[in-house]
Image 1 (tube, rainbow, N blue to C red):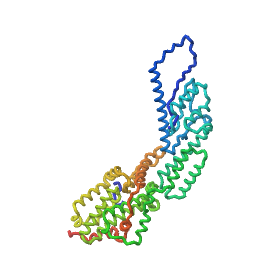
Image 2: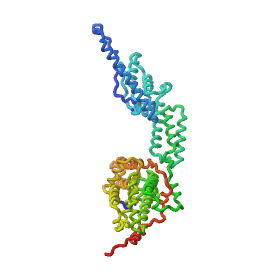
Image 3: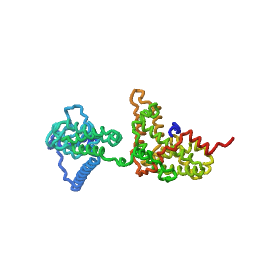
Image 4: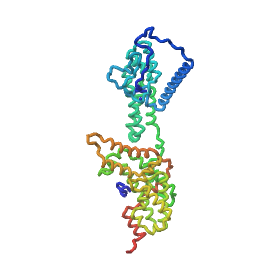
Length: 489
């Protein structure tokens, strides 16, 4: 029960200046100034040839590496520059030419573009030296050629480049949206259909590059493909199965079966919480049921399971039956720990600490030492001391799937919201606060997205959801006094 817990418990042209010295000079030397040429050393020629060969191989390897990167990241088109910064919109010069020297422009393009190779720059330099000073249009075509644009598209103006950059950015935004925030599309079929329709319209664009077409197709595939978790039974289906069916008693289920089905239920409840409910401390407002309905359902589920465990112990009139029930539930808690269901560990240990159960001294005297030691171990794991220090360490070292204790995250979010302003003293958005909140929500989302591969057993979940014999706090304490009256003072 949450209320019982402690409240605090870029082929960019960003190559640095590239100088290719020309063998031509402005002044033709006089005959007297010319020095006689020395015969070339054969070994030196061999060495130079080797160096040239190595440079050519390096250029080939670099191109192959760029091709490989393109294949693994289809949305980042190597032929599409993302941004072009230019002081003069009517010009698109990428190189300046002076006295046989080629210098790259100081303007930077995005780092996702493949860098202009030294071989390409050398080819441009030698072409300029042999043919005279080229005009800006020629250099613009050379730069587009080196960037990989098709020949029939190199003669277009810079509007073509801008269109391609805009398309690439839109596709990147959609890819991020679909992959990182899939819940938006799972709960909104209209939004999903509109995005798919937009992408299909984009794919019919005749000017669309191959990589951009692949990127759009991949996004559509992600939206339309079935999530492996979709084959998993839903919480609504489990609840419908449990309605109107008499559940089998606790003794008919093994500790392993109960632990697995409890983990399945806990994760199904936990994964339903949309990330929007974690903003603004809606769970602490008067209208909390309207603002954060899924957080409230998770809280209710936690309390229902805790009440069920306490009621299962108290309903046994025989002391040995109570001892057996306690030991079995502790075994369930330890199995849940192995399954990384720390929420269930806290559900069980918190029920053991309820006054109606804790006061049963005669019962606890008969509980085995091993069970008592295990309870102490589990309670230390999920203790709120040090802001859940031990639980945080366990979550840090575990791999999903996992069901964390939601109350820990709600405490963190409340602490950040109350202790840090939304705006700085200068009236700017406090991005430091927003970053802290995003880190918490990202961790929650990570645990929500990885499902357990546990087969549903209806007979066990029917028992776990059965509230017919569950008692409230007052009834629990009265029953506790009846089975073990207070000792006279």
